[in-house]
Structures are given as structure tokens and as C-alpha cells.
Image 1 (spheres, helix red, strand yellow):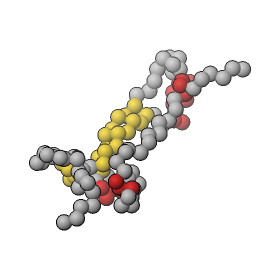
Image 2 (cartoon, one colour; image 1 turned 90 degrees about the vertical axis):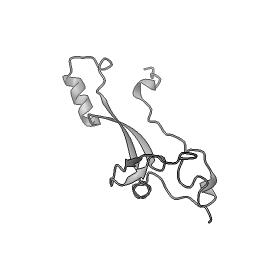
Image 3 (cartoon, helix red, strand yellow; image 1 turned 60 degrees about the vertical axis):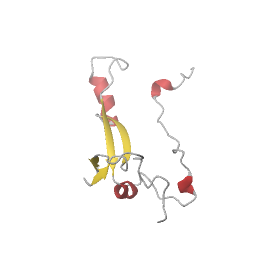
Length: 116
């Protein structure tokens, strides 16, 4: 039978069985190696309220940083396509195995200071 992908849509290679995880969106059971994984780091406090907290805080701005939420999200293939986490690619583009470039938001303290 013809094969659509070189890895058959999984990264199991040599393992007989892989435990299932639940899709974050629809709770479908998906093998862990087949699930689309996304690691999200988000602030507990939204950006609008951060300034209010800093103004009301006793600590200086650089001393205290509000905590973040670290989440590992697992999606089934259909939910990942539906929510545009992954997109379908042509037959030739499917052969390209390099991961897409990562775009990281620049932090404010990483910027060089402007002279006045």
C-alpha cells in the first residue's frame, strides 16, 4: 500500500505501543507520539493589569515579576488543523523535514537603551 508520509504520521519507530494522551480541545485519545505538542508560557495576570499591580506594589519594577503558567498542550490532528496550529502541505513540501522558524517576542530588558 502507498504511504503518504515517511513516518506514517508518528514518531514511534521500533516501539510497539505508546501511551495515549487526551487532546486538550476535544478530549480524544491520541497516541503521544502522534499528537501535536505545543508548549505555552503565559502570564497569570493580563498585560493591562500588570501596570496597575506594579503601581500598587511596594517592590520596585525590576524586583518582582508576576508568575507565569507553563502548559504542555496536546492536540489531535483534526483539532490542530482546525485551530490552525498545523496546516496541510503539498506533496513536495511534506518532504521538507526542517522545523519552521521560531519567532520569540523580544523582552523589554533585552533592548539597548536609547540615549537622550
